[in-house]
Image (cartoon, rainbow over all chains, first blue to last red; front, side, top):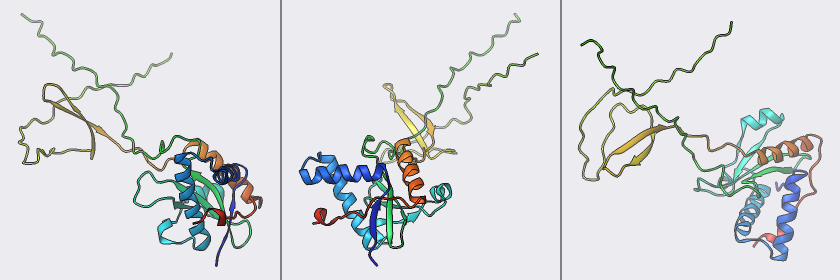
Length: 136
Length: 92
């Protein structure tokens, strides 16, 4: 059963509107073009079969608990650690899928939240010199 | 009377010291290493300094994305979403 794809309002709808308009006008930048191509592919697959294996769809428990309805995540790319993600949910009507968010945010720096970072340690204090024996 | 609690700082002490030989691929094994990840500093005198590191969750969402999700979810709960989008012009 094919699903109708809707965008969450206001921001996701605005992002889609902006990207799709500029795509038709041929005004997307190189990175935006790549991102849009992946997004369209994922949305096409979502509409056809939300459980398509290449989407690697899975429910996000933390967001499901927060919002009170089941939130799913689909990957924009496979075999890429820095791949983007599409967050979606069923509804508002039966047979609808609403995309509620996408990461990376189009205004974020690419991949800024995907790089695995390693924590730093506080600077170690230099070793204290051994105490001298005062007795002589 | 107020009590000032000061964070106790402890400087590292040497708990083990040993000699190792690098294998054919210049690898050495760390004995009793308590962490999986290290920051390695290669010093000009040939020494290597290893500091433990831990992974930061890569799945953390940026505040912008969280805001986008919050707004969309609130509206979706009210039954509000955009009209269905048409992907046909963009699909090859």
